[in-house]
Image (tube, rainbow, N blue to C red; front, side):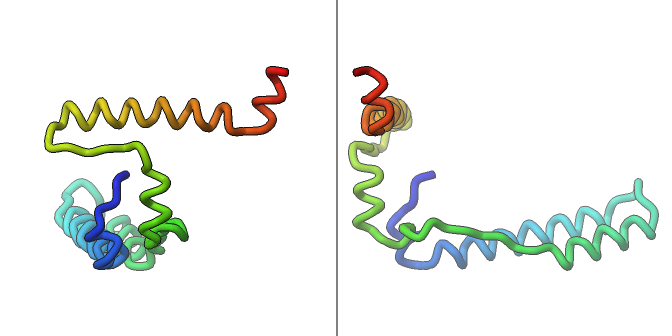
Length: 111
């Protein structure tokens, strides 16, 4: 997932929390308007929905622009979806190669 500077600076965590709120409201609406379950089951499900834990997590480096730039070094973006997909595929291949040959154990296996 690519992070925008806007997300990093202006509260991606708040946006994610708002998104969970909206999902929870919609699920509640769908449950209340369903006709195939009886009232007892509906009440149990709505209780579970109310007490649902929210687990929204971010890596510790999420807000560190320097770390993010270094992590995604070599990945470029353009206005063309096709070019972006090529860039992502190329980036992933290079990352696989880097991780394969940067591990000490992997290099020793070839000796």
